[in-house]
Image (cartoon, rainbow, N blue to C red; front, side, top):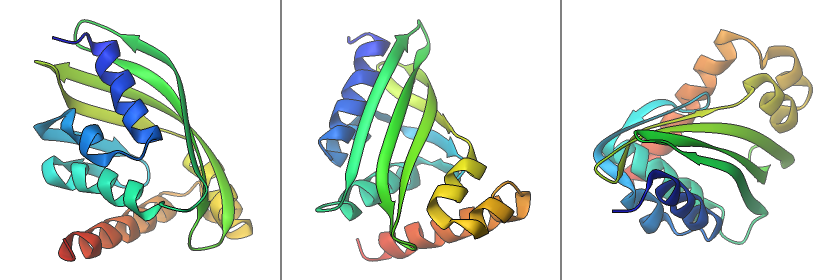
Length: 157
């Protein structure tokens, strides 16, 4: 069995190559994923979110870098950076993310990505993000939009 650092590294290597099937193969059947943009997604929704993100970026600026992969007995952590163009505004975003993982029997069962939603909003949306990006209202609205986008994408599968 791979150690936890190897599993996390493989996940991010697949992400860099935009290999969604390999990325999501590291997730358990009932995985839980949480981040400020999507909220909490479980199971197929979490896997579909990564597939949607990776496939929607084909041919666009989309760069993933990762470092500080740390494996523990029960999971691990990593830092990663995503650089891309936010499709709704055409603005460049460089998002710094800290990830934590719980890994059981060689599969990721819990994945939490943490980042500064206000900083992300300023980059993605400019003045509107600067003014509203740090509010709970903004985060709830963003999660509603991203989940609607995911549901629409899933309906086309």
